[in-house]
Image (tube, rainbow, N blue to C red; front, side, top):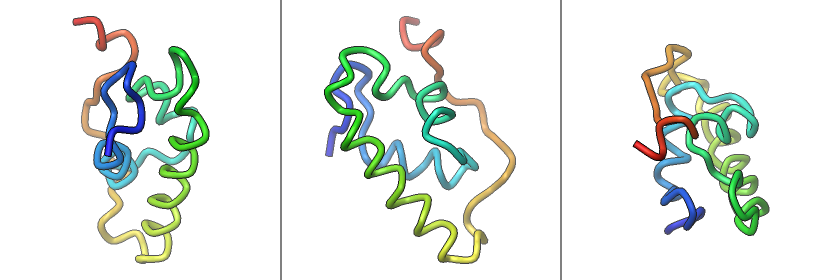
Length: 79
């Protein structure tokens, strides 16, 4: 499902970011740009992030890498 229309961010994108080590909503905003334009997706984006972050922690963190792969941040979204 698309969470952020402005930056074309889906729930899968958020789940992937969490699995790659994104540990806060603010970091998610920097990495994906979610909830940084019009803001109408903020509640859904936070809820989706919290869901996936909780699942990552509950799973023991095995699939949740602490090494960050390069992701698109707001500066790269226009490119």
